[in-house]
Length: 268
Image 1 (cartoon, rainbow, N blue to C red):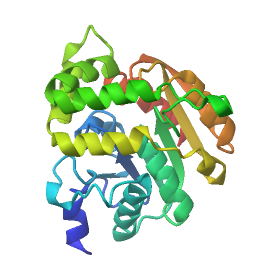
Image 2: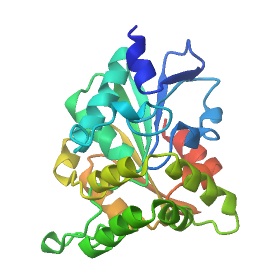
Image 3: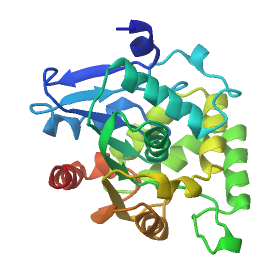
């Protein structure tokens, strides 16, 4: 086994390491694998659990991140496939949050070898509105430019405000603070570069190429992903299933873990 790959992406293998099936948990922008600390415990007894961090985040070495290399989601998909290959996964289940969903989709389209089912939480194939094609992604170019300016001028102030708005659940401010802390752990220049790649990505053309059972989990209120986007995914991914959770915010696996666990168990 190539330990350098596992070390490079801070790969953790937990749970029932001798289990026949593996669940891979892939976190979204601004968080790291600790985002799954509650959800993963519900599956540790039966499944082998795999977690990892993307280049430029979590406990990975900042030196492995390159804005030139990671200028597209496909580069992250290649990293994901490298991890899958190293662990020799077969019929694994991917539980992916936010941008990891589209990274997982691209990885699965490129190689059918590793995954049998996919669960996407708060996924979006395009964040920018596209009026020409009557698509509402939730963001205008002006809104994104304002966000980039805020990240550039005062990253830590932006992280504090954005984390609270994205997490919602105002009655539990510690959840927003958790997200703020993981955002602030990322080097500001890397965070800005990654944010631009994510929020300006467009994976719509790839959706119909996915041919795996797929569960879409969406909350009622999500600042990053409106319901119209979840519905769009459900219409364009063959055989997908959409569940709207009785929860709010972009991080139901953190704020409403029990509901996410129930939905995943019903699906797999």
